Image 1: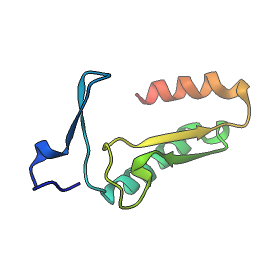
Image 2: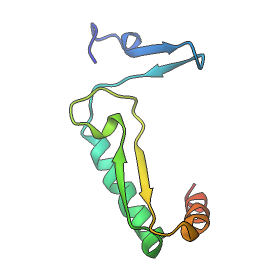
Image 3: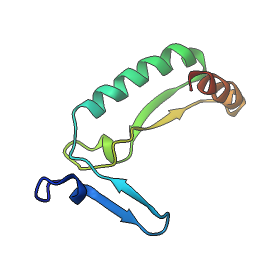
Length: 92
């Protein structure tokens, strides 16, 4: 998102939540960060998860977005949910 190259041009004031939201140009590091997190989650959640996906605006190649990686963790049994939450809490 280039509006004259000034960082302040890439900040949107969101009146509903009364804070500023930073929007950045697409970065290839977002996909790499997802792969790193995927590896960590796979190691720690191994038998508890079915799959996981990157979702949200950072998953769209070329799209300017908030620099936050959103990940959906898919489990096959609701009974595993509390164990998954506990392991994620340990990871921080």
